[in-house]
Image (cartoon, rainbow, N blue to C red):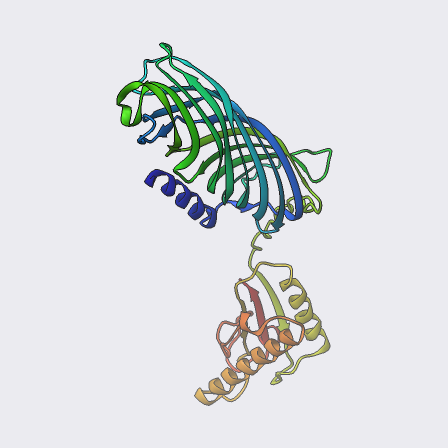
Length: 376
């Protein structure tokens, strides 16, 4: 009993806890499915009673058929209602009180309805989608079987219909049919069980009585209970979606980041003792701004300089330092107006140090009155 409930609990939990590495197959809207295949029942334990011995019922391989109507939620989850039918021929009754062997005849039929919750997986294969789930419902078992021991010491007939709650676990594979949109071939394994004990009417003739005791040859009638009912089914079928999801778009080509450009420098020149831009200077700044949009950048360095002309001594040096900073600020403002983000621009002022053309003190040199724009 614990094994049955543990299986159901594990299946339900795994339905909800889907591995994040796997993606959902987006089944959307209404669908129908039908399938059929082989049904295998484990031996059922028959409980002792005052009228009949205990033992095990054995069954031959039978058939199973299932039809479902469901709704896909578009995120991998599906819910459905199914109708099911299983048919198995009787093989034999085995008991320590009955000589081994004997002949069984007749069959049992089970049928019912179930509500299932399932999850479809996308494992990256367009032709294969595994899925799993669980269901609960109600079913009926109709029995019409007979058994005769090899020495004719015990003959029994079981009949009637018993109903109870059922549950199942499901694992399947879906194979989309490429030439019919919305159609998929499916193959499934299902574990199904009905809660017990299941009670059916029975009659018996012979020298074996209740609790496996011997008795005078005679007739007995009453209820016969089977405690376990574990069924395994292997099936194939078809599923059709009325509103299939569109096929996935082809993967986008990989985006290759532009290779970092080599360090690039632009020179902007100024008139003597001025920090405003000439038309020629604005054109150079505009070219630098356009180039920045096509280059992988981390920072733009804007550095201002002056020539050595001016008031001699420390006072003149301080003046030239401030002038170089104003020139750098002017170029930064122009770059921002041309669309360059301000947070990528660093400014520096170097005054009359680092001349482009070496000169003596108090010398006017046009190439030293400049701002350098450097891409890094």
